[in-house]
Amino acid sequence: MNALHQTSARRQFLGAGATLSAVAVAMLGGREALAQGAMGDVAKDVQILNVALALEHEAINAYQLGAGSGLLQKPVLDVAVLFQSHHKAHRDALVATIQKLGGQAVGEKKLDDYAMALKANTLKSQSDVLELAARLELGATNAYLGVLPSLGNRDLAKVAARLAADETMHYTVLVSALGKALPTQALSFGA
Picture 1 (cartoon, rainbow, N blue to C red):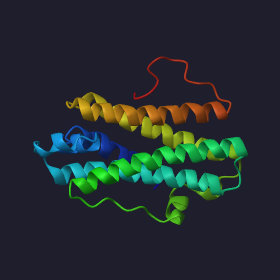
Picture 2 (tube, rainbow, N blue to C red):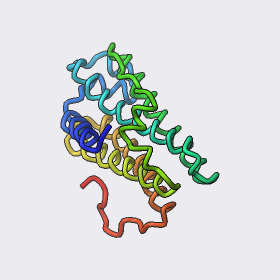
Picture 3 (tube, one colour):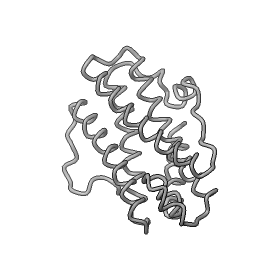
Picture 4 (cartoon, rainbow, N blue to C red):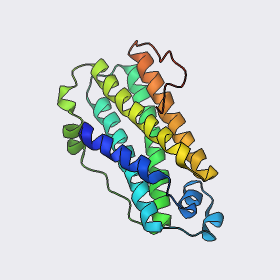
């Protein structure tokens, strides 16, 4: 996925996020009993959730590329594997919700496809891997935070905020590992 396509996918996610139905919100939040009494545009919900799922697939594979590159030192490799596990949990929650809604979850591409889209052949050092991961995490942070103001449903807002918190934590750790300064301004994310 090139940078233009990544931006487009995030915009699609942000633009569509406000229309996620009460059914999808309840399912994503693990409240199936609440979902049974709600109504909504399930096909649209599945489409929106699949955009988020595609971004999680990308993150999982980016961390796989980094872990398999041989460029990461042991403590950094451990953190990359931990962050990948977080993205797998995000993926699993999205897939389960899509399936409960009767939809088909978007499939994961081959690792080689992600490698090409993310230009993994340009990764020559641990810093290169961390820069890539930080850029993706910042994009994910801003995508999830960007959808929050337009959400009328508190349960969905809570789920999106929790996902954004994970992404923000990942970004902050990666920037610190790169030896870069953390953002100095308040309200640095989601703008």
